[in-house]
Each structure stands twice: as C-alpha cells, then as structure tokens.
Amino acid sequence: MLYKMFQKYNNTKFLLLNIFKSLAFGILLIIPTTICSAQNQGIPRDGKLLRSELWRPFDVNTAKGDFFVSPKGNDNWSGTLPEPNTTNTDGPFATIMRAKSAVRELKAKVYLPKGKAIDSRYVGTAYPFSKGKDIVVLIRQGFYSLAEPLVFTPEDGGERVETNLPSGAFEWHHLRDNYVTYAAYPGENPVISGAISVTGWKKEGNVWVAPFNHGDVSALIANGKKQTLARTPNSGYFTLRQTPASSSEIPFKQGDIKSWKDMQNNRINILLRWRTAYNSIDKIDEKNQIAYLKNPENGPDNNNGLLVVPPRYFVENVKALLDTAGEWFFDKEKKKSVIFRQTAFQILITQIFRCRRLTNWFNLRETKIILFEISGFMD
Image 1 (tube, rainbow, N blue to C red):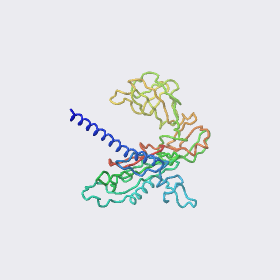
Image 2 (image 1 turned 30 degrees about the vertical axis):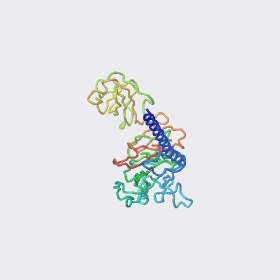
Image 3 (image 1 turned 45 degrees about the horizontal axis):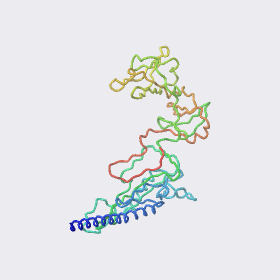
Image 4 (image 1 turned 90 degrees about the horizontal axis):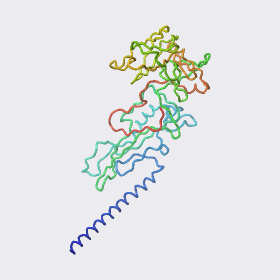
C-alpha cells in the first residue's frame, strides 16, 4: 500500500513537473513571438522564414518601393524615384513592362548563390540562392493602357532561398521566401486596362465626334463608367408579337423595329430561356412586322432556340438609335466614335477610352511557385 501511494505521488509529481516544463517552454516561445510581432508593426516585410515566423500580409503603407511607374515617367530613367526630379533627368518608369525588366535586372544583383554547407553531412536542397530580398514595384495614379496582357513567368517572381540560419537544435539552412509585389502607390488608385484613350473630340450638331482607327470598339468608358451603345428600347426589352414561325424570324410589335438607315453593323440581343443569343438583323418586313435574322437561332442541339420559349430582345449599334444622353455609336465605315448629347462633355473628353477585349490584363504562366503578389489595382 505504501509503495503504491509513493508511486502515485511520484507519478503526480512527474506529471506536474512536465506540465510546468511545457508551460515554461510555451512561455519562452510565445512571448518572443508576440514581442516580435509587435515590434514588426510599421516595419517593411522582407521575406518570410518557412518556420518560426508568423505570416505578415503585404502592407503598402510600410513597404519601401524599389521601382515606381507613373504617367509622368520615362522608361529611360532609373525608375527608383516616385516622381520626376526637379531637373527632369530622372524619375519613375512610364510603363509596367519596363518595371518588369528592371525587376529581373535587380534580381540578378540581390540574389546570391549559396556556398558550402555549414555541416558537411547536410545534403541540401535544390534552391540555388542563399540570400535575396523582397522587391516592390509601386504604381502611381493614372491610366495604363495595354495592347496585350502582361505575362509573368517564374523569372518575374520571388525566390525561395536556403539560408545559413538554424532550423532546429542541430540543423541549419532555414528556408526563406522572398516576394515580388506590384502594388498601387499608397492612397492612389491606378487603372490597368486594355482600353485606348479617345482624343480629338469635336462637336457636330448635337453629337460629339472623334476619329478612331484602332479596329472595332467593344465598349466606351467615360469617367470610369461604361456608356450605353445606341439601342432600342433605351432600357429594358421588347417582347414578341407572337410565336415565331421559324428560328430565323422575329415577329415584332408595331413600331419596335424599323428599316433604319445604316443597319449593316446592327446587333440584336435575344434573351432565351438558358442563354443570351447575339445575332444581327438581315432584313425587315415592316408590312408584316417580321425581322429576319442573319443566322437561324436554333440553339445547341436545336433545343434552346426561338421556338422553345418566346424571348425578350433589344437592338443596338444602329446610328439612328442615338436618342439619349450617354449613348454612343461607332461608325465603322467612317472610323468615328460618337457620343450623343453628353452633358459637361468638356470634362469627360479627357477621360474617355475604347476597350479591347482582354480576358485578363495579366497572366501567370507555368506551374512553379513564383512568390508573386498583386495589390490595390482597378481594372
């Protein structure tokens, strides 16, 4: 009995001792980490150790820019200043593409190859560098037009480096991730887009006209707002007069569709049961109130066309439909964009853009981890 009591006492003592040790060890770990996190507030992030370091999201307010891009910049400058100097001999870059090549050049300087391992028994990793740094590109307020998407590959991103820092009691070569970040300059909202600025506006009667020789126009943006392509009705939709006799006919109600002038580039948007069809009107029979489509609208497997459920529709891209402020029309034959009866147009004409059809304004290619960040942009 005495032996069992002594054994129970010893086990309890051992358990309490282990709990105390665990708590003490936890305090030793937690307190420095908390202090470290508090101390890091306001300090720019420069990489992250894979272990023993808390994740810190990118903070543009504390980040130090390596390169800057601005509409006031010049790609022949160093790109290391946020704005042009007083002599206008140095300052930011003008394009993101130039900043991209500068990042590669800087990486070649700041990423150092690793040397001999501290412990000869250490096998090592496949990562070739021992030291690097985060690289930050800050984009100033402005509109950045892209003819094609920006493409970033692993060479444009950060690297995982094999340091000489301890990773355990008898282990070394702690791994660290360094990042490349493209961010909006603090407090600013740069816009990156596939649009082209439209200039040279002149008033002709009650419309404003500008030349445009860059192909088709898919959208017109003024002061950040998409304008309405000339259409009828001006809002909402028309409905059919009756069920179509074929998948090529739109039986319209009196006055909804007319034989307007210059209809060669018209478009009709048809809202079907499970999809929206984009077609064009080939000819119009005003007497019998039937518009004939250029292509039959049968739908996939002939089961989602005009004859299934009577659709709603509207017609657009006809010059004769320019009847409301904010509507526009692209005269493909005369290469002119037209915006109609726009108020305060003297202000708007400095911020009007034609949109290209870019699915994405940037692409990340290949499957390798490239430690790349995008922060704070509008598109």
